[in-house]
Image (cartoon, rainbow over all chains, first blue to last red; front, side, top):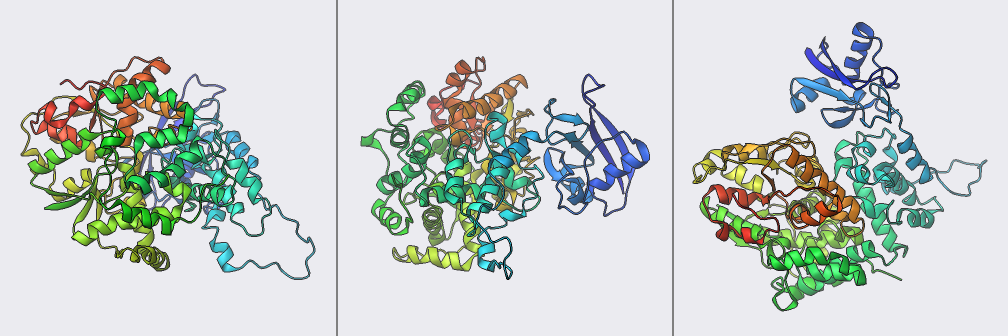
Length: 322
Length: 287
């Protein structure tokens, strides 16, 4: 099989700016992207730098960007890649932020590891270090983690996260999924502390933009976004949620749905923001002028809203405490 | 051809032009529309943060409304589409969860079965009508440079949309580009085409939301687009309603009209600005 690869090349110590090198390779039909990178390094250009280690999708070191998608090079069949992206495959580092590039496809993942460390990615429990018999975990206790323990810290989700692009403080999908991995573990004794940490505005669960990019790229099926949703739920269930604009916004939907069936957009913002609603005045005025705001007297309601109200009342599993 | 239309909340409130233009396009294409007026809000990607189970029950009921009519469920908003599809995918593979949800629905005489297809209007018309038939109705070729903006929830996660969005590659979708070309416009490529507008953190982290939207408006403008088109009314709120405020705060000078996807079709089909509801736009649409 002949493939064409365009590979990002940049040595910040020598080069003024990055460039792409093009390679035409002859590879086996079942070759993966890592085979192609090895072929280049071993046969064409020994100076190409990339990370690799286990070759089995476990160490997470060979994560790169392939035609815009963050992937593990060792788990990406070239045949499928060509089907998805066409004849020319473009390989880039996970981040093209110049400060992060060490060389070619190798980046400094310090920002990623710092966030990972912040959430204390280990079991916090007083355990007997010399137990007489094995500590067994029941299958249903493992199932509760919903594969959050599959994370190999490759960084694919972190460097695809849309929120991090605009908010360097956001913990990101990997650290949050890791938080859930322990907050859902019955043996862990720091659940509340963990939830209080990720409940903080600016860094935690409330700052996820819900772009779903983390689900799309995760090579291990961790589904970080859904873990973030579970964390939100745990925050409410454990009574950790503060009555701030974010928590009130999520809860406000219940009020609105019970009252109107469909949303009362204006009231939802007012309920969430309280007195700070005034900051939305410029946009509100624009909307008003253009007939985009409904008033209480012409606010549409779902037909049979009583039925919806009843359904919410019998189905709601908790309330906003505090 | 008949659709059960799940309008979502915005089409009935802050983006009335979306509902208006959708009905015009459906009429032209010979699609009968039955609006699901008994439907509730889908939770807009936030209700499930408060209560995941409640979100499933509410949306299962919404889906039941289309199932009861034996019609395809068609949405107008990316986030509605994702919320409903997520619910369907979860219930269809988990008998226990489905039963738990049906216990609640049963108290009101509903039963979720799982036999209705849920599609965004964009993909519904492409699948059921097709580009060729759509092209036959053109009365006013677009002749415009248009930047497609997909919005997240219609292309990601691809597994959730599998079979419902013509199997778009989330890194290389082409439905909107093709549609622009069919309507005789020019599709403009730009770096943030598949990125997020930040709408869902607009209240709790306004600077993030505004920064992400600003990037899109700036990139599309720099690429020479004369308009942006989006299938999502939530993206539209950020891109259109907030555009002036964002330009001011981010110190930018973009001023680019933003069309809803059905508006673009309605324009090409020859409907007037008034019929379409272009007067509801904050950034004037004058072509």
